[in-house]
Length: 362
Image 1 (tube, rainbow, N blue to C red):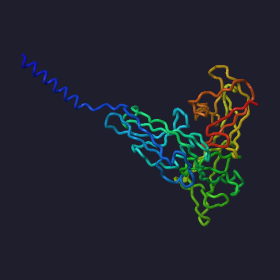
Image 2: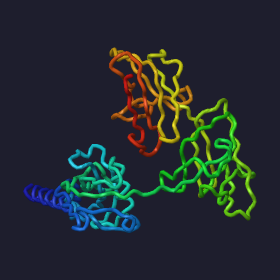
Image 3: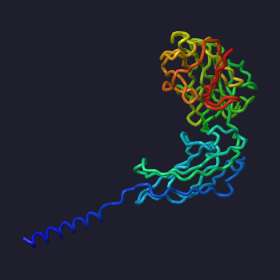
Image 4: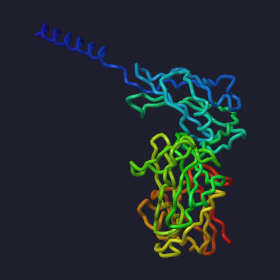
């Protein structure tokens, strides 16, 4: 009997030992990375030379998760003193001293709301996470840098046609906001039917883009005056108004979408819209109308919407900006006559950031 018990105990000890040796360590936060800023990038200016280069401003020590795991490192930026509730992510990498495009850093800083050619005080941190378990993470301490971002001039093409009397010297600008050779923006269409072309250089009929005869929504490129002149794009709608135009140069395609922004809400029993007027000179939309004050009821307030219907959702407000249908109703405190000015564009304009609006009681 004693021999049997002895054998059993030895077996238990043997399997217990095997279990301890064969179990992999569990990944868990042990030691966060320590972030270092290279001396040259603690206080610097992004200029026309630097914007084209690749730089190494940040480095950090390896994060310790107590196990042999693959770690992703994300460089995050925020306004100095910010809580990183909505940080701008610069890049994600496995490296401890990655190369970064100066242009990407410049864009991230501008995306925080800083203006070009003005001093920006920015906080930087590194978030380390386990690649196959991203909820296991730890963040470095925050380090501050001072940067003067570069004002990068956007590439521009020019819309001409019946919308401006075919005056090649006064074409309407459409810019490559996303810097992908995709030009987009709003145009005023004074009549329900228009003809347009796009010029690469203001005042010159070549290079230009006209309509393709072979592909719906396609473009034909005319590189020089010696090449055949393509026909203009013809667009028709129910009424004059504002259209959003996109010109994709690499794909030689275009889109034209009527976009008449309006206001609908309690003041009209959520029925008819009052429409904005668009100013191509400022890039802003303005409307003056009577509004009802907030009474605490669910149907109080108003929203913005396109073309008088809910097909694309109702644009309310979230965090002080224009939001899609997830945004709440926009409110005013009391009844009265108000002027609303909004920027429905993709880029900041004078006095207004992208998707920002302001309400003034008259």
